[in-house]
Length: 372
Image 1 (cartoon, rainbow, N blue to C red):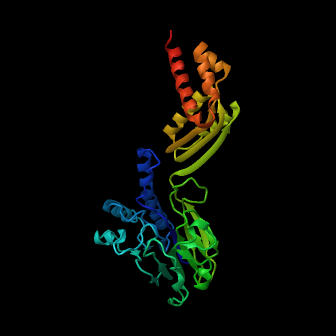
Image 2 (cartoon, rainbow, N blue to C red):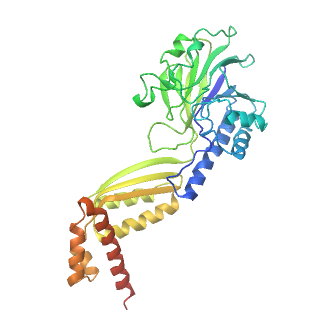
Image 3 (cartoon, rainbow, N blue to C red):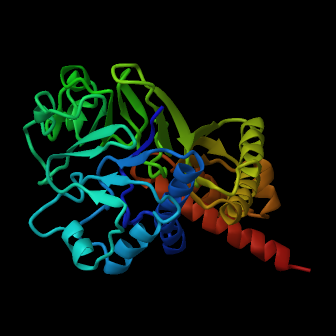
């Protein structure tokens, strides 16, 4: 029974400008090491071919070194790789793929399909109908020709394409690189391997998006997986099994702090965050000076443990208690300033007032601790 591995949207060379440089470099490099793990998985599961449904590279301008590193990452699997260009690495007259050819970087078992064609593997029982993108955007369905394409009888018909299934994905991406929702049925495909949608998504029994194998966004859409596809026979429904490949797990948290127990729960959750987490945290509500210090300490510790922790406290109001003010020994004028800053944390002055209150409280706390 033939078996393939379906993956897509590797986005090799992707940059992570929103992160600190040390995190950005690690996240970018993780995309390459994930490909190495995919190759090892393909070898371990003895698949008959690995299909890569476009956007192998994030841009046409990746370095020669990155091109070589990508193809070196395929070495663990010696069977056939079939790769097509997507919208990020379209097969233009001059493209990243042409550079890879000139560099002699593409190994013999990697079949890069730069034009629409059929690639047959009789020993594996497969006929691959490849529909690469030759420009970044097209308004015609590049898989139209699948319907009339003739393949050797007895071979499984596998479509490989990059684009948006019409009417089933987000409206804002349905206008470019369209693919008919019923293409697998119309073209008598045993399986249609798609790329472009970065999450895992089943369209019908024979049509799937694998998503990107390494998470890159704060979305819970099944990203970070590849698909192992068992193909029992021509015309028979395949068995599709997702396999997790991502190294880093991206999470977006929101929390509202109202009472002390809210903060306790958040701090416990931060303590339990694993090292492979890429965390984006947004807090709202209010907090007193003592708990703000506890929160800052916990965030600092978590930043040292997680791969990346970014947090947004702009909607978290700092509300000193009477005990906070007494502990700072902010009598007289300073006490009035603190009260005024506390009350100004709304409207256009909110950010400035909160920051000023934090700075003032830290100065007063440091002064108090420095006193004998």
